Length: 501
Image (cartoon, rainbow, N blue to C red; front, side, top):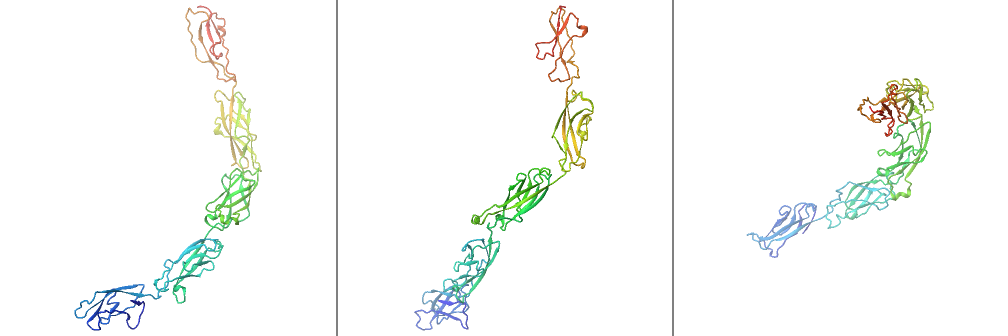
């Protein structure tokens, strides 16, 4: 049996009639009804078997009802035949509009996509019966968003409809989608949703310097590695597509300067990699290049994805300290040099254009005994006190050069002074000797070997001459001579007996 949903009238609606073949038309048969909604929604006339729907039905709430009917004896209530099951189906009417349960939607598609590129798919549902009639047959269309996008009427797949959409021109689109039942025909119900479509970035734009010429100035005494300026190549793209690397590709300072990329700002940072000297070179001209790190091969024909700019760098003069003619000095002086004699000279100059006069001095912490002096004007070093090589062979002092116009500009240089030997020390016996000789000693017998030392240090080594004291020269019992068998003949002379005693 069937009953139309949502029907409402002044009288209950007749659904159908039950009748048994045993009914001859007498009043002894009684019809009874049981099952879904029996007695409340559906009521049967126990005499005629007519079934009426007492309430307004909603197919979307319950689509069918299963009931059981039976004919019984009105007096005894005994069944006259087995019970019969039947179904009452609620017939659909188009009383539900389509709904987008997952809306509103958000989707993305790369910019510059070709026509027909898939964007997203939307889905609407209709609570009406999808089998009976067209109440749930949906057709999709775009109300807002043309001519940029299209939608397939039956699958609800949204695609691009316009080529070369540029994110840098417009990034976001607001699209309104309609789903209409009854196959889209007039009288059908509809529902709408919105789809926010964002164009994602592709690398379709090259970097571009904000200006073609940059000017920077830097002091000549700037520390190595210090930044002296920034250049910036802007890129309309974003994220990875906007990243650029910088290089110095031409110029007279390619080995003097370097350029690196600031990962946060994408600036090119120019730094000093070698010392600058205003007096040698006062300006540099560089050509720098910014190039995209990530190139999209689809757009390489629109390149090159790079740009160049000129950078002019002016070196400014800084007040530099004096510069000695040598990083170290080695002087030599004989230990018997006269007081106030010149033992050497240091020289220094101011490298600045102004060329300040220089005054020299000795750092007295390195010459505590004040053995040396220096002429403040010409840097000549003189002897202040006598020297003794045997006491101190080397003297290490520090000379200070100071600019007269700016006393804060100071330089220092080490000076090593070597004291040269002169023969100013007599030989000395290495030790006291006491010799013993038996009375029967034979002539020529060695009775003692003696040696001498000397504090001096002659270039060719020591060579001593030994002799007996004058008062012993004519002694007939002893003589002294060199020990010819020794490697060092200046040592170990031999005392020997001449006569038997």
